[in-house]
Length: 160
Image (cartoon, rainbow, N blue to C red; front, side, top):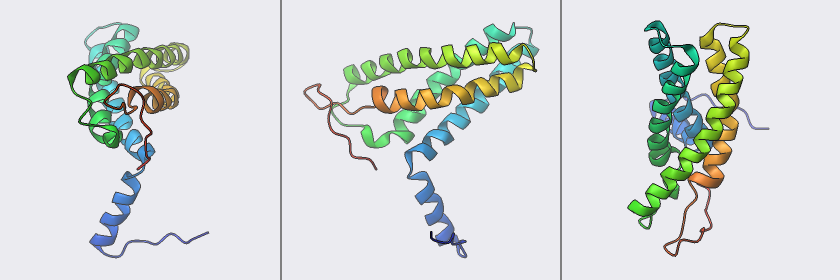
């Protein structure tokens, strides 16, 4: 096993950060964490404003989901973008994303509802988001952000 080398210069630190973020899972967690924090912020703002917790959870999820698609498209799966993915294919990708997001919503809302019976809504929401993250990654990686060839068939994808 190799030793962890602590960066001693800014250049080494930047190289270490770049190496970490070249990993798709790290990019996914960064996007997901950002969207999760936004979702929790919206949830809390809506609940404090008087919106029922479950309705607020769904509304916050929808806003977070749209941002999640844009960030995953441009950051997490940027290597799977192709000039062949013009408007019709991008719209198809967006439609598949919304179908997969509905699955994630079902999982996260179920977990949220269960935990919310016993604990405050904010940690219950965080647990729901985290539990759905694995399913979300697999659906995005295998279905949503696949690269289609110009003929419409699935193309082989080289991992970055």
